[in-house]
Length: 73
Image 1 (cartoon, rainbow, N blue to C red):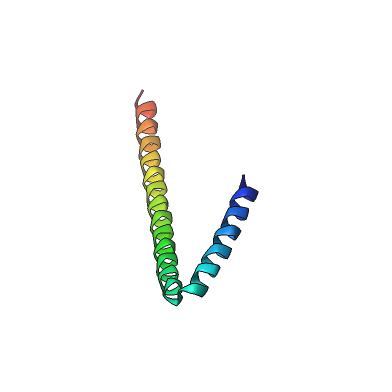
Image 2 (cartoon, rainbow, N blue to C red):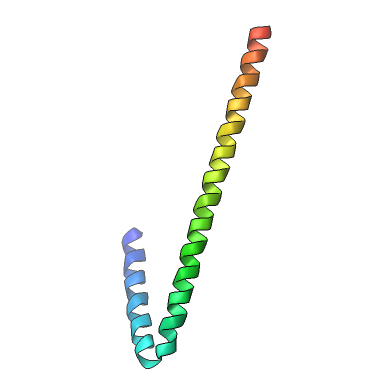
């Protein structure tokens, strides 16, 4: 599956390179699009990190509360 994705990515790069040879403005748009995609990837990664941190925090609270319940019983 990963090999197929690499092949597809390589094909896309070749196609975009050929396209940019015919229209120089395409290269500028491609750079902007790749920057936006990279920014979006970073935002998603940060969101995932925050979600994991919140889950970890809630798990700590649950453990604390369960300890209180079992110690009280």
